Image (cartoon, rainbow, N blue to C red; front, side, top):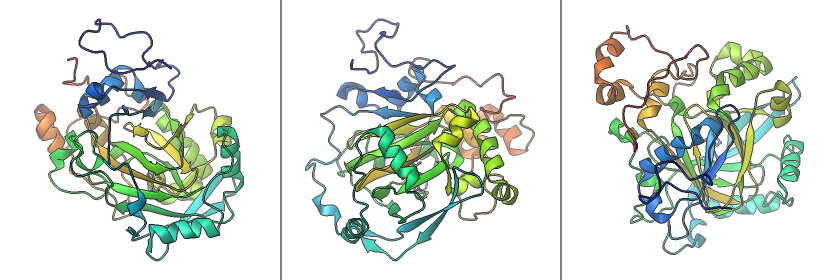
Length: 374
Ligand SMILES: O=C(O)c1ccc(O)c2ncc(N3CCNCC3)cc12
């Protein structure tokens, strides 16, 4: 596989043909291999990926340069004593529609990572014994409603060395810093202690933000993604499969407790893609990218959200879940004031006419006001 990365200063102005590039009409999940020089500037590399249309596929994988060290020791033997405050037992219930499942995330008592791993051992959830992607996928969907996994998810904390200054998820420099205060899990890091079949349901990020996910140690994570351009179609499919949920909350996917199998999505004609994220690899989810997935065995990942200027139009018009009071709320006027000052008055008095960038009726999109090549 050719190595891909941002055009070096010596490169010609036109991108080299072996670099990944997405066809807007049939976008896929792309994989990037930045060099350490290209990796140093976080936001610039994200913007570079978007010049290759990475965002059109919904999510993208980055294989970091081998010189990148989130932990000088490279060891994770010290995590066993971490206490996971609210592990969840993931009880899955089949609905009247085949391939559509409701999830009850039942919080269980706090436990250490060691105890969580002991549980996985006792329940034969240490590892998916299949190796091949299609077989792992078949086994996940076949075993969904039995032997519920426990997921040590959404646990505040970081496993990056304090002095790691490159792509440190606990210290990313992004436009989200304009918030100026900590919003747990959004601009602070969460750890996810997974086991075989521990999963995450279909959702876009809070306020349709970007997210970054890094597997520090252990088994792979299997991802599904739908292109942002097909997000509204996906929401209509979900509403048709879960009419009662939709009636109760028209943003019920934000509850992150909805599973729809790949075979149902395939039958709907909505395009989607899949990718395996291995230990040491990064997944970026782009604004308004519906994604879901599961862990292939014991692992620990770290994740947070971030923003670029291109996200602001998504954040301004992101749908909000009305029924879960503790849902993330960010005052978008902070971003309008800082990055779209000419629109602030009409934003604040509600006269600004705008719509979500992926609304089918949206034809012209506000061009980025700045970027590495503007
Ligand atoms: O599990 C992951 O690696 C994961 C990856 C990417 C995401 O956007 C996630 N969003 C939410 C989420 N959960 C865990 C289960 N409880 C609800 C929230 C997990 C993830």
